[in-house]
Each structure stands twice: as C-alpha cells, then as structure tokens.
Length: 324
Image (cartoon, rainbow, N blue to C red):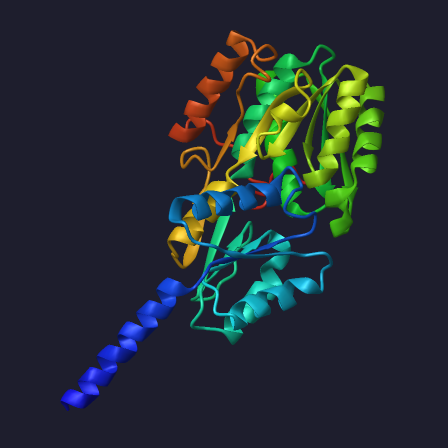
C-alpha cells in the first residue's frame, strides 16, 4: 500500500515538474509578428513575459492558412503549455488540436472556442472604437471621416460600428465613408491597397481616416501624411509611425492578454473592454498637439460614462446594430 502511495506521489511530483518546465508557445497569424499592429502586440506581451520570468518561449509565424493546424500540433507534440494562438482565424485549428491533446492548455485571442482545455480572450473593440470615432469627428474640418477595414468579417464590422457611433455622438451631422480592403487573409498585409482606399476617401471629402486593417494600415497612414490629413491607428499604439499625422490609436491590449495567458491559464471566456483596460485610445507626445484639452475632456467623460453603463455602445456582433 505504501509503495502504491509512493508511486502516486512520485507520479504527481513528476507531472508537476514537467508542467513547470514546459515552455509556452505562441503562433502568430497572417501578417507576421512584426506587423506593427495585432501580431506585434502579442509578440511584445511574450517578450515582456520572457524578461520578467527569465524563461524562453516557442513561436511560429503562419505564412499561409494550412500552416495554422500544423504549427499548433507541432507545439502540442513538444508539450508546450499554454499554446497561445493569435487571431480569430485560428479558431478551427485550435478546436481540432485541443481535442487531440486534452491534457494540454490552449489560449486563443479574438475568438471563442468552447473546449474544456481552451481559454478564449476577446475584446470589446466597439468601446475603444467609439472613443476614437469621437476624436475623429471633433478633429474633422469637413464633417466627413473615413474607415478602412481589413478583411471583411464581423469582427472588423464591430470596429466600424463602434467608430460610427462615436462619430455621431460627437457630431450627429457627420458622415462616415467606409471601405473594406478585401475578403481574404491577404487583406491584412496590403499597404498599397490601404493607401489607395484612403486616397479615395480623401477625394470624397474625408479628412480623418481610422484603419482597422493590420499591416494594411501602414499604407493608410502614409497616404494621410502625403495628403496632409489625419489617421487613426489600431491595436498597438501607432502614434509614432507618422508623428503629426496620427490623431490617436485605438489600442487593444493583446500584449496584456498574451502576457496574462502565459502566466495563468483560466479556461472559459475572458472579455476585456474599457472597464478592464483591454481597449482604450492612445495619448502621448506624438499626438498631444492634435488633441485639444476640450477634445480630451469630452472623450474622457464619454469613457467614464461607458464604464459606468450610462452610455451603451452597441455591439455589431451581439446587438444586431449597424447592419451593413
């Protein structure tokens, strides 16, 4: 009997030791880890984790859609934990591989996968987009502002819907001109097309454009600089990319989500909005001269009202709002 107990204790200790030794892994989606936006925020989160813990992590950059499942399975076979998948497009692959490796832990950013060994982290992008929409409307001299989305999917429509609500909140008479870059994953990494769409919107009278398009946004920001207009960044704080052109950025703290996921696994769904610090708008030395004290005061007031529930920002994906 004592031998059985001793073996059980040894097995438990060994399992705990293996878990402690296991490295986390991150699989970046299309666009690469240096996309200056969504993936890069995840990379920064893992680099902070590495610096704080002194440990290493595994990583893989997906180059085409077929690699998602292969990369996740490879990490699972190496016993990585948790395995963090960046991006909604990896949901199918995460669900499949998580079923194959029920004893491992998986985290997906930006989509919900209902498996007992999966943590899903999603954001209230519409809340942050509402705030930058307010800033766009208040900064606009023409009363027309633009929106350039990446891949035409409900998630990006969620950004657009929140942005339009913020624009109208600040100026009910303002107009929003909107375009999506494409319908395939390549829409996230097409700066030339982003610049083309932005120039077309400027031609229609827009003088501030919000890009929710991953790496494609770089082309939007360059077009805004060339035209003497304003642009709004997304996901990461992109104010520094074109100082004097970037009105603000709608920050989505993928870095915080990834950092927390690497430190602590909590199966189920975690939702991060303004109240949780998951989304916000960026203020720094690069845009301080573009956002007046009055603009800042009004946006801060709206932010407090959203957190307190006094302003309800409709969610395109949940509230049947802004249907296009």
